[in-house]
Amino acid sequence: MILPIVAYGDSVLRKKAEEITKDYPNLNELIDNMYDTMYGAYGVGLAAPQIGLPIRLFLVDTEPFSEDESHTEEEKQQLKAFKQTFINAKILEEEGDEWAFNEGCLSIPDVREDVFRQPKIKIQYQDENFDTHVKEFDGLIARVIQHEYDHIEGVLFTDKLSSFKKRLIKGKLANISKGKIKIDYKMKFPLMKKKR
Ligand SMILES: [Zn+2]
Image (tube, rainbow, N blue to C red; front, top):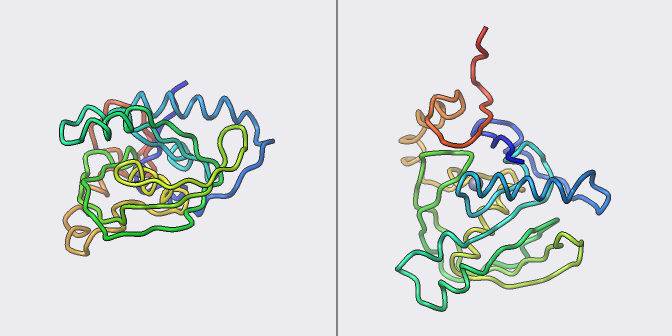
């Protein structure tokens, strides 16, 4: 089932999300619904706060990036195969020289900006069976994980822009909160005026 994606300006996107246990109600169904929602919006990642739940859960599937001709054959194969559910994730290390990548976010449609992040991460997380893993990732896979991880920390990619860039997109962000935007997936806007 496709769930509405919460738009920029909703306070749930600003909360530090809470850990969950195996007993979290209807967790498997929730995860399935989040995958449906992410694929329905052509996203490569989705975090629970984006569907209104302040819990430490996010999904990543980098398959759409595998089509990009700028990658090597090996990178394409990796991107194509990478699909993972992250529960109670904790980034343990980030390293390397920051690199820029043009990021977007399903909660902030039509805004894309270069964001600088370190290229390598080490992350601890639980999978859908609550088995714990510690893994290292780099490149675009690390990038998507870092973006989604920020969501469960209450951080958005627009927070990482220069104050000049922030000023430039301020009006656009305000319009997104009010629902004054064209989108082709289901969203929930915090400041949309209700029709009488
Ligand atoms: Zn996002």
